[in-house]
Amino acid sequence: MGEVIVVTSGKGGVGKTTTSANIGTGLAAAGHKVVLVDTDIGLRNLDVVMGLENRIVYDLVDVTSGNCRLKQALIKDKRFPNLFLLPAAQTKDKTAVNPEQMRLLAAELKEEFDYAIIDCPAGIEQGFRNAIAGADRAIVVCTPEVSAVRDADRIIGLLEAAELRNPKLIINRIRPAMVKRGDMMDITDILDILAVDLIGVVPEDESIVISTNRGEPAVMDQASQAGEAYRRITSRIQGEEVPLMNLDVPKGIMERMKSLFGLR
Amino acid sequence: MTRAEHVALKGTREGLVLYLDPTADFEVLMKELDKLLKDSVQFLQGASVRCYAGQKEYTEDEHARLETVLREQHLELAGWLTSEEVYVPGKSQSQTTEDKETRLGEEGMMEGSCLFVERTLRSGKSVQFDGHVVVLGDVNPGAEIIATGNIAVLGSLRGVAHAGATGERNATVSAYYLAPTQLRIADLVTRGPEDEADGRGPEIARIKDDQLIVEAAGMNGWRGKAR
Image (tube, rainbow over all chains, first blue to last red; front, top):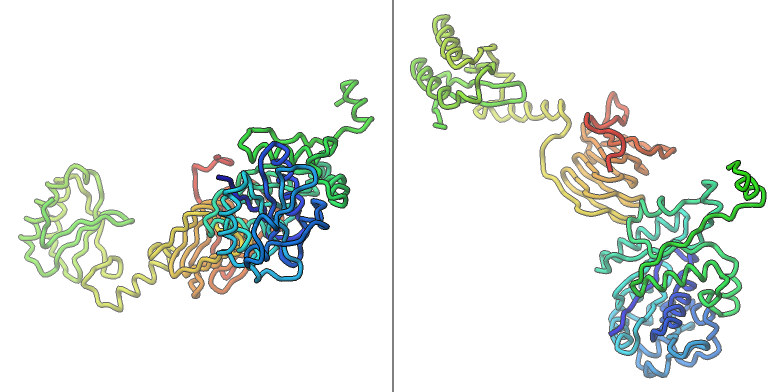
C-alpha cells in the first residue's frame, strides 16, 4: 500500500512543479515505484519539466472519465523504469474532474505504487480541491516572500480543514546572501508565522532553470546545490533524519585572508 | 455554615459587608450574628467589616452592642454603607441594570459569554462572536476576529481584531505579542506598528480619552521572553 503526497502552495510560481518533479525523481532513484500526477488541467507543465511532453497520448481526464485504462495513460520516464507520469489534460479545464473521481484514482494508484506525488495547481478553487482529495500527506512549498507566506498560511488552514493535518513545509528559492544582509525573510521568520514542520530548504540555483529547460530534474545533478537540497528532502520523506544543508555564504578572498591572519 | 435568615456576611472587592435585615427585630439580629460569627470565626479574625441595613437607623445603644459583638470576634466595624454603595437583589430592576452598567464602565467588560478558539487562526479564517473571544494560539495575518466583547490572544496577534464591535468602547484587545494588521475597538480604527520590535511582552489595547492606546499588560512577574 503506497502513499499519496500532494505538493501545493496557494501562490503560483513558487516551485510546486519543480519540487514535484525532483521529489518524484529522487524517490525513484532510491528504488521506489513512483507516479507523478499533474492535476493542473489546462496549464500542464510537469510533462515539460520531466521532458516527456512528446509521449502523451492519454491524460488524467481520459482516465477519470473512463476513456482509457489507467495503465494506458501512464508514461514511463526516460531515466527510471520505476517512475511514471500521469499528465494533465491541456484542452479541458479544472471542472473536467471532481474530488470523488480523484479519490478513486488515488486509491487505485496506491495499489500499484509506493509513492504517488500529486502536483497541485495554484489557487484554492476546484483544482486545489481535486488535488488534495485523495492525498494522505501534504507538502507546502513557500518562497521567502510575504505574499507566498500569506498564501501558504491560507493553504495550511484549508488543508487542516480537509483533515490533512501536519503538512510539511519546503522553503524554496532562498538566497542566503540576501538573508544575511537582512533583505530577505529568514527561515525562523517564516516558521514563526506558519508553525509547521520544515522538511527542507532549497537555495535559489541557476541549475534549476537549466535543468527545467532541458527536462532533466536537478536532483540527478550532483553538482547542483538545489539538487542536493532535493536529495535531502527525498531522504526525509522516506523517514530518514538528515540535517539541513549548510547555506552559509562562501567567504570572499579578502575575508579568507583576514581569517587566516586571525583578524576575524 | 448555618444559613442565617436575617444577617449575611459577604466578601466583595472592597472587603467584607455585613447585611442586616432592616425589618428584623434587633434582638434576633444579634442572636443570629453571634452564631454566624462563631461559626466563621477562624477565617474572619482581624478583618474589618462594613454594615448595611437599608434605610434603617439604629439607636446608639444598638450601635454599641453591634460593635461589641464584632469586637468579641476580633472584627472591626469600619462604617456603614448606603443603598447606592451595595448590590441588593431586592432593589428595583432599573436600579440594578444601572448599577451593572456603571460597574462595566469602571472595569471594562468583565463578564459574559466567551468563545475559546483552541488553535491558531490562519489567513482567510474569520471568527465572529457575540461575547468575548480567547484564542489559544496565534492569529495570523489575513485572519480576523470580530467580537462584541474583549479579545485575548495567548500567542501573536498579527491579523485584524475588532473588539466591542457593537459599540462598546470599554472593550479591550490583549495579546502575548500584539502586532495586528489593524486594530479596532468599537468605532475606532488603528493600524499596527510599522516596526516589528521584538520582546515587548504582553500588551493590552483600550480606549482612553477617545484614543486607542496600547500599554503593557499589567503582569508584574513578566521578565523578558519567558519561553
